[in-house]
Length: 182
Length: 286
Image (cartoon, rainbow over all chains, first blue to last red):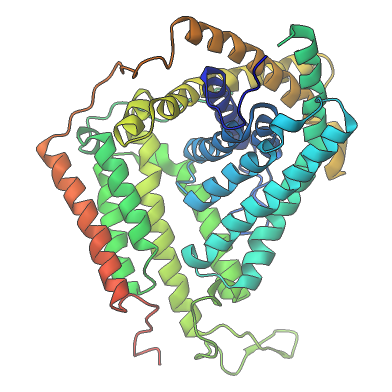
């Protein structure tokens, strides 16, 4: 069977990107009220695992769109307005774990789960790093505030959520793949 | 709980404007306003944002929740980060300045609190308020005034490739369905004795307790997605340029708005290039 390119974007990817974005929006909407005290523009979001998982399962483009569009939709639903750089940061959080989508041995395999966790953390650090830095030119904050009030709260909570929930979703997806033969 | 989009037809002036022109204006406004920290420019942008918001005709009772969330965000950003700690202003406001309480604040139980708030930081907080409120006014109005069925064709019209524009279209359609699935799963799990509150105060356990909700909804959505993808493939999705159910046509006023948006951005870039628009402190503060 011909192996699909990591960056291909066929019908399945169109549908999964839309599902990932909608799911992320819904879960974000339900948890957006959980603002982290004294952290600017940051809420506690267990849903961050969704773009990360969709990236790992379906590739970087699906992961990116799930995070980018999902964050826009979640903010539109909640009424937060539009925060382009945070949307882009969320997109990166899905894109970077998606880079290992083609090289995973399986979704239950311990080594694959560890690789996915590693790339998830990398995506979170880069994605939230970019979004937090944007506060320097959007809100006029200095580097210390950006790190203390934006980056650390966002990156740490997202990393904890991803580290706990990503393996659970991967193992569950492995069962779905095995059962359906897809 | 039902999740649905906030749009309903209001016969407002904004709804007469082509959605593509509205997005172009919104992005032009966003990128232009973020070029300035001068309160005089920001006040003009703020007024423009308020006029734009008023064109939407969104009553307060509908937008109240959105403004409450923005207010909370502003509270954190301005009161905590700028006024109390000062870090939120450190990137723009020069060090030093004129203290609001030069002698400190006398505490009722004795002693003096040497609070370092300066008038420059207060002025910067006003600038932040104008900037973030202006951006919020322009973008909060979108979901209330834009028909969800037009997002796909709008972004196609703005140059997004067919497949990506269709992702936007599909995602908007999936939101209410997935929200319903989420609530059905929540009720079903509760009927089996699931209680999210039972995890206690341990945050790690609380996160893990979300899995019985998240996993079934996600896996069910993926299985549904497979069927949707097969159905789309059977209808030869993506084999030819896509036609859209709704067609958008620019009118004279839309062209006017596009030209205005372009000018707004170009003039803003020019002014910044000439050195205008940096953080400005009124002489009476000094």
